[in-house]
Image (cartoon, rainbow, N blue to C red; front, side, top):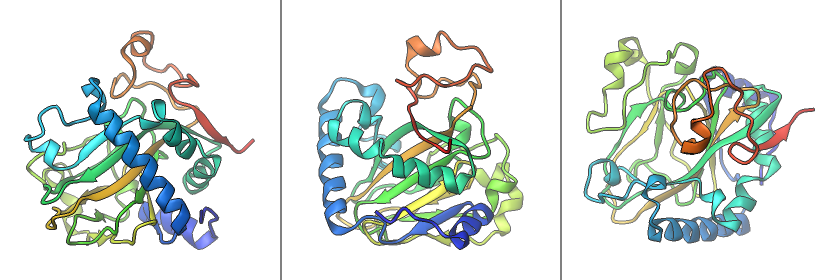
Length: 265
């Protein structure tokens, strides 16, 4: 795993709000990630817990943006091994410049053949904590190209973003009605080979094109929460019983729900 960073990469991430690392996984590691993700996604889609995937109505617009399977590390041993790797936490924490990293949630995102585009959006406003240092890891399990719906970013938007957001719906440009000042920013294509990693700030505007091919475009992702983050009142993926115990401002430090996988101390 290419998890060591140089000062140039750190500076680029903090200025632009995203970083592409090609060759992040070697061939053996990529084969392992593909195997574990494919197994875990199959199990999740076969399960009755539709709250952790978006294929309840497979013909809906959102279900055709991508197959989304959340919190796979909670139920699949192989995914737990991959997602709880301290090296991933150190990588995320170093880029974000924080003292500790907790997993917010992992999710597989598989853009199906001829899948819909992913509207421009921000990540952090969906979540149960508010942070300018939240960060996500996105690992390409297949080549991510302009043809099959690779990621695109608006560099620097994490520096001026507010909690306001747009949903991932049919209006792919809805975010620009909220942030009209971002229309002049030139989008950057994050096409990358399989085995690459893309890391982005939770407030960096991003989206993805349609999959114009007859093959899926698979990615495995993990969203990270800086240690010390507090509850903002949004449930998102928090379990209902845990959510019921929280008040705004409470620390989100339950090790079973949001495990600490790396600490600088």
